[in-house]
Picture (cartoon, helix red, strand yellow):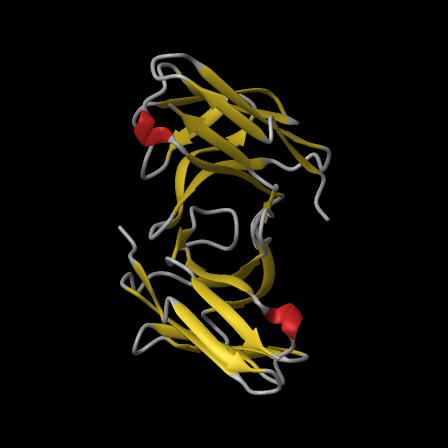
Length: 112
Length: 113
């Protein structure tokens, strides 16, 4: 299995609080992605990174920011969490062109 | 942007029978089509993928077919086993694995012993 660790695995928080999710990889892969998974929507891309300090938006980026200060860590931040951001969040990584994405086991986030 | 539709949303088959899941995509420039299997409490795991220069690919009991003209691709699982029960997702992208993936909405496959 690809060396991807997501933390925390579960979190419950209140509306309006900031939340940061972490994705840590031990594969030294260049590309990292954050997705959210909701019933009836499959997985949707939030943000992705193509290198240290290089990030770009996905299709559902509103309300989220990301940072990547080193190759192994990709952080997803909800500056002021809303109930609509209750979801399961997955991180994925890939090495280079022509390689598939591999996923972590997710973070279940509940915002009350 | 790309849109991927997946059918059916649920599928039940008798153990030993075959299962087929179908996806259609909208962007004719898409050229990479992976399939993922997701078990409860886990992240999606790649089970097979196909690129647009290939019409079919097999890996033991799993096969994927691609029809570029019709813009659809299908997952075929033969001789189904109880451990095949899971949620399956198709996806499409413009690149070769490092590009943004657009996913279908998933198919919950149940194998009946």
